[in-house]
Structures are given as C-alpha cells and as structure tokens.
Length: 47
Image 1 (cartoon, rainbow, N blue to C red):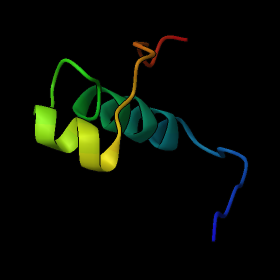
Image 2: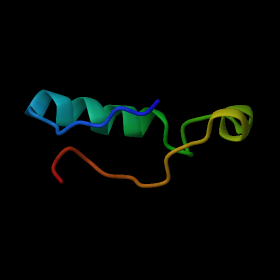
Image 3: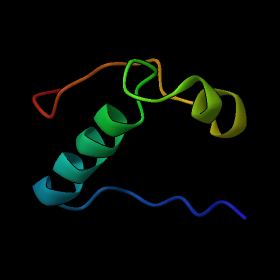
Image 4: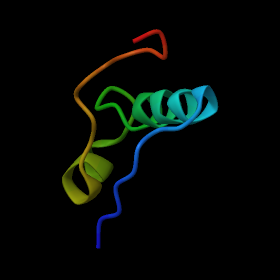
C-alpha cells in the first residue's frame, strides 16, 4: 500500500532530499539496483 501526503515542513524536504541522495544510482551497489531499484533524479533541498 502506498500512502501519499503533502510535505508540511522544511525538515521533511531536507529528509526527502537526503533519502534521494542515499538511493541515487551512483550511491548503491548493482545488487541493490536490481533488487530494490534506485533514484535517477538528482536534486538538492534548494529546489
């Protein structure tokens, strides 16, 4: 089940940016890419 909501704070935006960085295809192993997927969009909190 997927749960979606609106971001309500700057802290949440920072957390999203950090998770994106950690899961970017340049940061994970080939095994993780094939089994769990990855993020291709690189962005910063400033967006």
